[in-house]
Length: 499
Image (cartoon, rainbow, N blue to C red):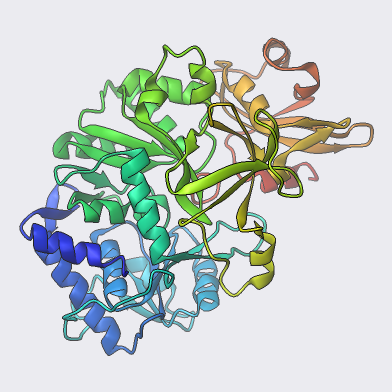
């Protein structure tokens, strides 16, 4: 099934229902959304796009993004969303690797690609795509490519994850089963990049005929988000943990209550206990956690709002520190180095299988083979599952520190440090050491007005974690390096150790 069919059905069921907003202004109702998608599809077909071709999208969050997604799907093509913060050379590499014949872009981003040798169409220009609107959506099989997602590439060239129509359907239905409800009166706000998780959640909101709000800023702005939520009401938002932390800090500083925010689904990096406790204390029962990765988008585990907000369960802190339990559409296990399941309570690699799991990487059979064992996707994330099925992430397997033969998971150290009021951000890495193999190194950002007191931090850690896990050195930095999705670049921090 072509995932684009859901828009056609939403338009038939509620043609006059509000669909897309730019800020507070309505741009399209569902009939208009459907008609514009058909026009984009017609323009692509007129330019030679055939079923299965790849159409790249390189633009900031905007109504045009939704038209590009659904226009490409209506034409039977697959989309290649590219983070708008990438350099044009990085974007051009992805476009070439994907074999995309056409790039849909807007404004400055379209101009940046002008000398890269690819066909770039500024979709915001009214006459950029000319062709008769398609009358019928091109049929696609469930296992046909729908979305070619390129990993963030923090350790080299990004890999293209094959995301099929079946995967998008399974992910969307799991949202309704395990994450949150959606009704026509709800709205999704695109504050995080639509090339990533925020855009992946567009489909379930189209399915339910909900509203789609694109900030005028094109991204995350705490003041704008709170104003749009208050204006529109019943707003859902996907956010990285760093965004939740910034939103909470802004709301506290400005006396904002978050009126109109119904659901904030967070994922994409470690959410530290201190940060989510502060967010719930300020905004209330609106937060939901999910865990996924490009290879199984948004659909590995979920921690529903009631459990994020619960403070009565005897193990509420442990559960809040977890990423929840397996979503309905997957099987989950914790495996050892050979892929065999380990006992509950033991640390191992998180493994997943089910309909949302990728069939493999784009034109990369070697990497695809390494990613699976007996049908299970090896996520590369280390974790532990308790007797009730709650999974707690430790770290990426490559981030684990082995000091004197003992395994140390950086996140545990980071959690301990972040509970100290003098620190705002922390990232822990292993530093090579002749005696111990590796020792723990903490890069820290102090809170406004605070000073770094290593003795106080040592005492704080020793009251919470084993002595051998305590950082041997603290490095004060003005900010932590992050990629375009807000994830801390530990590879860059490790490189600084050699400077």
